[in-house]
Every structure is written in structure tokens, then in C-alpha cells.
Image (tube, rainbow, N blue to C red; front, side):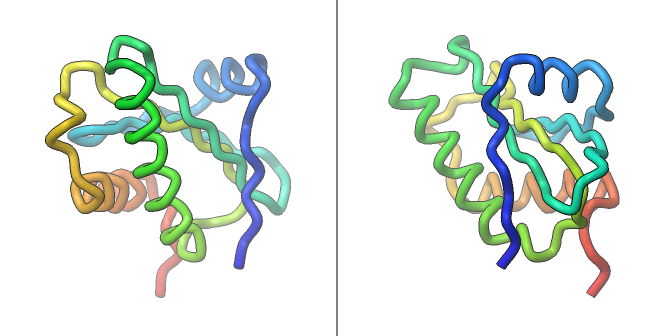
Length: 115
């Protein structure tokens, strides 16, 4: 099982969002930057424009769980910040929608380990 560090500091988010590469899917988008460490870093930045706290927490739980299931197949040494698109209806999003979107984005960004 891999270990992933959670990004909490504002300057870390800002650094990844400013200097990282941006990839977008249907529901979520990510900004990715190499961190030079042997550990991945994960950040979730869900805007209050997406919805109230209950809805934002729901989308965070879905993203975290999908990432947890995929982290064995993701390359080491990257920092990822997940963003949720503002123009979507969160009530209609399912676990499998996020899973498909994350697979699409990780394949597009070449972040998956070839099996």
C-alpha cells in the first residue's frame, strides 16, 4: 500500500496550481506537478460555488475513495490537486462517474503505471 500525503498549506496549493500541468475531464479537473520525492501528495480544492458544505463534502469523499482504490496504479513522485467543475449538478454524480473521469484524466496525463 502506498502512502499519500495530504496537502493542507495554501502556498502548496498555489505552487501546484500555478506551475503544474492542467488536465480536465467531464466532472473534475486536476493540476499535476512533480515533487521530487518518493511519495505522492494529494489536495482537494472544491469551490463553494459548487454547492453547500454537504455537497462539497460528498464530492470530496467520492474523489478520495476513488483515489485510494487507484493509488497503487499511479506513478510516484507527483503532487495532484483535484478541482471540481462548477457547472455540474453534484446530486447526479455517482461513484462510477468519478471513477471513469479519473481513469480518463490519469490516462491522458500518463500518470498510470503500465501493467
